[in-house]
Each structure stands twice: as C-alpha cells, then as structure tokens.
Image 1: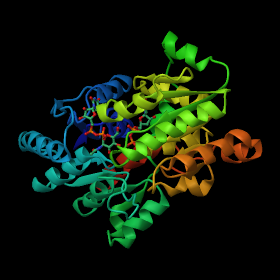
Image 2: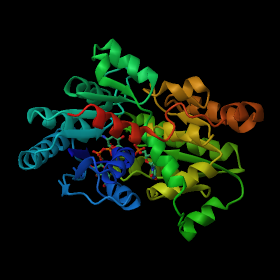
Image 3: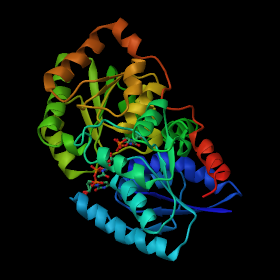
Image 4: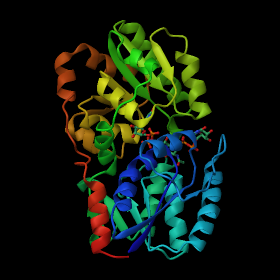
Length: 369
Ligand code: UD1
Ligand code: UDP
C-alpha cells in the first residue's frame, strides 16, 4: 500500500483536495492520512462536513488577523511534528495557499516526495495574486509529482525546466468537486430559498483577495452599488468571506442597500446552486472562475491579472480589473446586451472533465514514490 498524506487548510484547497481524499479513501492500493492546518476554521469545517472528511491531524493554527509569516511558521512547526511521527510515502497538497507551500517545504525537509495538485498556474507577476503566485512558484522545485490541470499549466512548467516526465495533465479537481456536489441532496435554508426566489436578475459577488484589500475592494463595492442603482431589476447576493477586513469594506458600502443581501459564507452545495441561479457573477476568486464556465455563467474577474486564462480564451470570463468605472461598464454591457450575454453564457469546461482525482491516484499507483 502507498501511504499518502493530504494536507490542506483553507476553503479552496479543501474543496479541491476533497475529491482526491475521497478517491484515495476508497482504494485498497492506498492508505490515507488527512492533515489539516486549520488556516481557515469555519470555512474549512464547512467543507469537511460537506465531503464527510474527518482529519487525522488538525493543527488549529488560525488566528484573527494572521500574518503570512504567522501562518507559515505555525503550519511549518505543526506539520514538522506530524511528519516526524508519521512516516508517509508521499505528501499531496493543492494549489497556492500558504498551507500548500508549507506542505511542500516540510515534505522536502523530511525527504518525502511531494505531489503538487493544480501545478503550473502562473501570472508571472510577483505581487498578483499575492502571495499565491509565489506560493505556486515555490512549490514547483520542491515537487516530484506535478499534476497540471491544463495544457497551458503544463507548458508553464516545461518552460521552467521541470522535467517533462514528472508532469501529468489531469484536469482540475475543482471540476470533480463541483460536479460531485451538484448531485448531492440540496438542503437550502428558508432564507436562501427566499433570496433565490426573488423577482429580478441576480448578481452574485464574491471577493476576498489580499491584493484587493483597501482601495480596490472599495471600488468593487461601489461598483456593485452603482449597478444596483442603474438596474432596478437586479439584486445582489454577496456571501461574505470571514476575513474581518473584507467584511468591513463590503458592509460599509453595501449593507444598507435594500437589494443587496450580505450573507454568511454558504456551504458548498448551496453556493453551487446559487451560482447556477445567478444571472451574472462578479468575483476575484480563483475557484469561482473555474466553476462558473462549467455552469454556463458569465464571470467578470475583478483582478489585474489571472493565472486562469482558459476561461477568458473560451469567452466565458473577462478580466475587468478593479477600477469602479470599468467594472460598471462591463457588467452594464452584459445586463443590457442580450446577444453579448448569450455569447458569454455558454457552458464550457476548459478546466477539467470531472475525472482529475481518478487520474492523479492512477498516476501515483503507476509511478510509485
Ligand atoms: C486564504 C489564502 C488564499 C485563498 C483564500 C481562500 C493564503 C496566504 N491565502 O486567504 O490564497 O484564496 O484563503 O478563501 O494562503 N477567517 C475566519 N474564519 C475562517 C477563515 C478566515 O475568521 O474560516 C478570518 C481570520 O480572521 C483570518 C482571516 O480571515 O485571520 C484571513 O484568513 P487567511 O487564511 O490568512 O487569508 P485569506 O484571505 O482567507
Ligand atoms: N464557495 C463556497 N461558499 C461561498 C463562496 C465560495 O463554497 O460562500 C466555494 C466556491 O464554489 C469555490 C471556492 O469556495 O469552490 C472558492 O474559494 P475562495 O473564493 O475562498 O478561494 P480561491 O478560489 O479564490 O482561492
């Protein structure tokens, strides 16, 4: 048996690692140990509940207002102890969070092969997204298995001289997750149900990125307000990230608008359902950018750069930056021009076909650590 430790700690790496953990759990070729850093608390626990994953180790590192150095040092010393006492054949982590980078580094210190799920995404802009671009890049030389979600990600790794025989194009496990959750029984709270049943076109907004804190996020909130004013048949659903700095800005500009509904982070199934019901999605999230095209929803990406160009090339997402006037202009065009809207609202799956986790574990079994 191959002994695998999966490490995750925030909402997105938990969602995208869950299909891999579940596939490993049901496979007699593998023994699975799940370690969570607890970089997020409530938002991680939501995901663990949905996918019915019980961690073997929980490092419980989250503190309010945690700095990047605090996350790194706490996760590093916690994981160091776990790996010292639990010898595994391979460590797997996903994406670009600080938890992921720490998992790669700690595995390296223990001379345990590291497998990077969702390898090779790049903007080649050091501070965008921050610190994720660097987290990803730092994972690359530390990893022995590079599971690239797309051909573009594969090419990025090749251009960084990662050996071609250590890179596999698997699709993104996030698509496995969103397809899986779509089939689960849906238990919507009466509050959400009544929001979804409202008359009018729903704009779904999520934002949380560190590089958008401050002025860019203020512009995002002001743009959302301006859209509500300009289009009286629209309403806004905004599941707010738990970061108090994010919540402060969003509530300051949007809380008292009668058609703005600022709610707690949704569980994954209700969130996926809300995406399906949305008319238009505005986001700075990585995962939402990948999920929305598979649901046929136009997405405006409120960031200066994206490491996920595939949706833009497929025509379902558009990078609009964080200037208020640009966000309003692009969203207004979609709300006013039906032909433009329908061109963007095509269902495409540039990020995966829902079988990425199966491929990853098959690759591990054929290329034993
Ligand atoms: C983290 C990741 C980012 C990812 C995002 C997804 C890093 C450096 N950042 O950013 O890549 O896109 O998660 O959401 O790895 N908080 C809670 N409860 C929670 C979660 C967060 O209270 O369940 C609050 C805490 O006060 C915490 C703050 O949010 O200090 C920020 O959390 P943190 O993980 O540091 O950064 P994120 O912006 O969430
Ligand atoms: N998501 C969720 N509930 C919410 C908002 C988002 O379950 O209220 C899911 C979303 O479907 C996606 C993931 O969380 O799978 C994205 O997480 P986030 O935006 O926090 O991080 P990022 O993807 O930007 O790293």
